[in-house]
Image 1 (cartoon, helix red, strand yellow):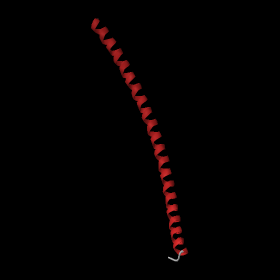
Image 2 (cartoon, rainbow, N blue to C red; image 1 turned 180 degrees about the horizontal axis):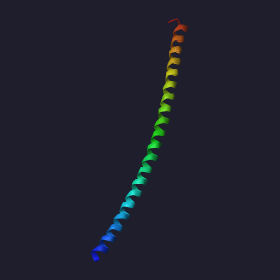
Image 3 (cartoon, rainbow, N blue to C red; image 1 turned 90 degrees about the horizontal axis):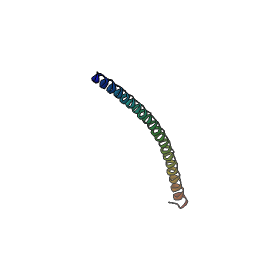
Image 4 (cartoon, helix red, strand yellow; image 1 turned 120 degrees about the horizontal axis):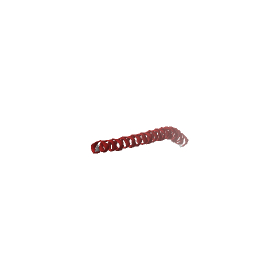
Length: 77
């Protein structure tokens, strides 16, 4: 009888441990999903910003080239 009571108590404890582990896993999965979503948004924002910077640099490069050509024409070079 004593062994049966011990086994029942052990089963209750192990069931509680499994429930706690499942809750922990669910919490970690939720955190992972949130973190992943946040990183994806940040990466998208940074990519958009880099594209804008690249476009700006291309325009400035073209403007500099035009200015260099015009400078050469103005001074007869």
